[in-house]
Each structure stands twice: as structure tokens, then as C-alpha cells.
Image 1 (cartoon, rainbow, N blue to C red):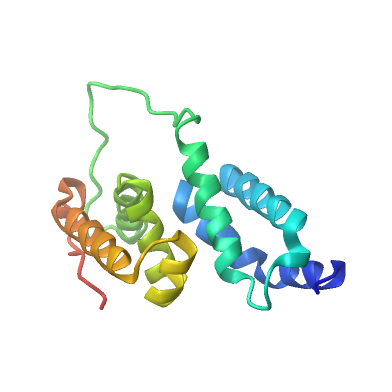
Image 2 (tube, rainbow, N blue to C red):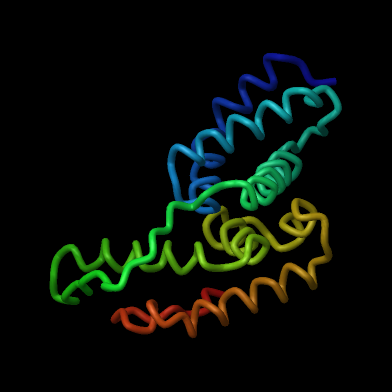
Length: 169
């Protein structure tokens, strides 16, 4: 049976990775911090019943909480007639612009596709663990990953950058 000390040790050890995963899901640091805090509060309530490998359960709570919040949160989009300037590829800040474009494209993916990309390529979790976290089959994880990468390949904003999105597998 798990106790308070186990929970504190887990939170201290895993919070940076959970925060990064949350940020990649929602693309807002303040929202990511709230998401991690809420997920960890939910986990605390059932901590005594969580098995010896809590990561799958905690990531599932994180993804499910994000998905449930997504429909209720205003995303701050403001319609405009003018498009922002596109950075020069030779500009030293071009890499940062490309990274921002990639994050924006990631944000345009549906929540489950974004979750599999974040968990697979940013958290480097194996497919079977992602399937457990998302409560689906490994085949579903593979198909969602494939669909997400296909959408990223044809994303018009990513296509306008000098770096192509490649399948990392």
C-alpha cells in the first residue's frame, strides 16, 4: 500500500515531465500548471490504490482532464484580416519561429491525436503504455499517430517553413 511519502517523492520526481506533457497538450504554461495540479489532486485521492508503476494512471488522468477542460476553455483566438509576418529562414530567430509553428500545428490536432503524439514523441513512451494510458488498443494508438503525422505533413503553415515534418519512427 502506498503512503504520503511515496506520493511526495513521485510528485517531486515526475512534476517536470508532467508539466512538459501538460504544456504540449494545451500550449499555455499557466493552464499546464493548473492541469498538472488538478491531475495530481485527483491522483492523491486514490493514491493508496495506484499500483507500483503510477505513470500510466497519472498520464491517463492528465490526458482525460485536459480533454474534459478543452470544451470549456476559451482559447483566446481573435479573428484578424491581416496575417502576421513570416520570418526569414536565415534569421537566427528562425528556429524559434519554426518551433512556434510546430507547436501551433500540434495544437490544431484533435485532442486524442495530440495526446498520442505528445506521449509517444515528447514523453518517449512505448505504444503499449500509451494504449493503457488512453484506454484503447495499441492499434488505435498506431492509427491515431499515423493520422496525426499525416495532418502535420499537410499542415499549410508547416509546409511554408523550411523544415519538413518527418515520421520519426
